Length: 516
Ligand code: TEU
Image 1 (cartoon, rainbow, N blue to C red):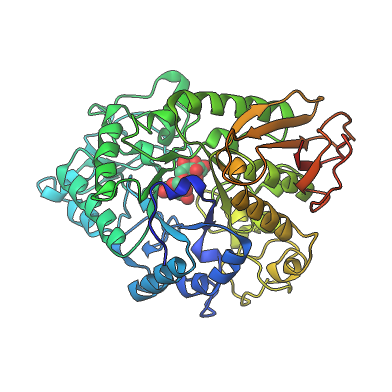
Image 2: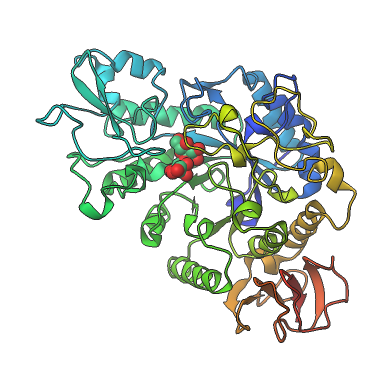
């Protein structure tokens, strides 16, 4: 049974499960909670410490679960509350933590709150959402654009003659967090799931929840961009402090409050940590959008560690999720993704892995007649291949087509192969778990030849293991000399480990972790 320990996330690697695509236990072509439970032994074998579940709440699935119609129930496609309770217990039995998605910015348009709000400007439920009269020309109240397509973030409710705000789909109306009932009820949602045993929340687009009272037009330089990236001002911070108090409850620092701060301004990202009284962790999406280039990563790492260091804050590292092309696809090769795993898992901060990343999955090519996501993100959501057949063990009418080459890029094909991407991840996770210097040591960039990123992790007084570790990554397709200190190799893309790393040369796409 998991002992709740203060700030457990500082020592953890978190694995994101996208439940629809993880494992299907009942053969309906859609993954479910019992399927996830059946694969926990595998995740434990892999060596992750926590599982973050994308939404499993009751939902009409206009945005595949990010449109919630009941915050206190599980959608039947995934199972039921009893299956959820079994999953929590099974995760804890394996000494892992369970983090749940928390979608606070909006609900489904099928949520009873929104059904009650519709139609009557008099209903007290009306104020749970954001309504405005039309502009003088009858059009939307301001120039905000919604996510996924360049259309207004407003939809007219014909019966009342007012528009409601939705930063995402029209089926995802934005909640009004200045309404005390929204704050109270959404706090209760957190308590409901903490009472069921969850260890924390990944809060969806949480930077959006406060809204300025006067929803003015976006300035010209932001006007074409989706409004979900805007800084919504002080209202959000006040809400975050309130939510943090709920999450802390009587046992502060035991439940994680992680924000999907999908913004591209570092200061804005850090602002959601408050004075240590808002989010515990904020996703760093600047790293997600850093291209595969040594100089680009050098400056991203330097800027992140400097900014977080000044605040004594704990960074996060993530390379992929269910919204963006996978890194094997994005960076152009599995060999690069293999080096990227070394980069990700040797940082100071909490790393996140997205299901399938450990196999080096590529995005599926989804033909137009199979596309289902209104945001065009089907490719990275293709079902996880477990067995070495063309559908990765899924039934023929799986909800999305499989990723390419399931026969070789599957758990079954890779588990017994010491040279596989899966084995590579397992070794890196084991190394991180066994070496305090990799988890909490300082970070320092070292000089390196062009195209190579080289850094050192150092722990003045480690509880166990070496004090200093060096990591070197060759981002290029050429051999790089004088690129890494000779020394004992602990892990790497090309050699599993052992006393092989005596040369200072890196092969193309090679990454090495050594004791210099
Ligand atoms: O994503 C928020 C978000 O802003 C993006 O990452 C989004 O997918 C991108 O702008 C698309 O172009 C979160 C969830 O991760 C995503 O799956 C949901 O669709 C979205 O919120 C709405 O809940």
